[in-house]
Length: 254
Image (cartoon, rainbow, N blue to C red; front, side):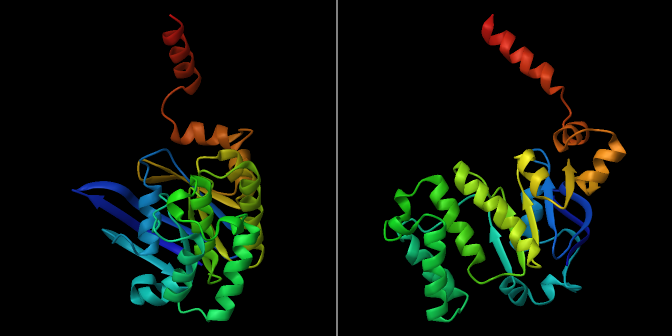
């Protein structure tokens, strides 16, 4: 289980994440939602160890992750929001490098890389330079790299970015399959329909603070709203979206 206890992160004294506490459990998919600037990616980077905490604690299986960060990272797979890759490498070279950094057995990693490239429709371009890959292809390389070592904790920050419809459907099913096999899966996405279909529970962040943490079904019942979109709009969107849309259309039509 991944557990955040009163976690905060300040930049120049300004809180980006403010006293956040929640759990992501094995066998569940935790959707982590919020408007731009709400602190989602900052939270993800703290969980991965890329950012230090201003206050609070992050635990995995009951142990603080900073107690042995290297051991924790061995059990974690992470797809970042921005697809930073080594552009001079090919897809297969990049994944081979990741396997070597994780000290995976050569034969086993070669078989997994071959299979992932096939299943993610990257095999024909495996020897091409990543610099020539589309955004969706780069995203699939990151997904393959995150899963290569069979992690117990899977963190996905906007994982559907750039994916075509078919690949997005595969990833949606894959997230559910990983959870069904006992993985702890936490993902952030602006695609509310996908979050609603995939997530066991959702945590909604607004201005660095949690405004909801429950199953979608219970949130629908408690708030008497029909969908996650309606719940999100009420809890985390300050403007009247319909009114803003009308005003934009009126402005350009004038």
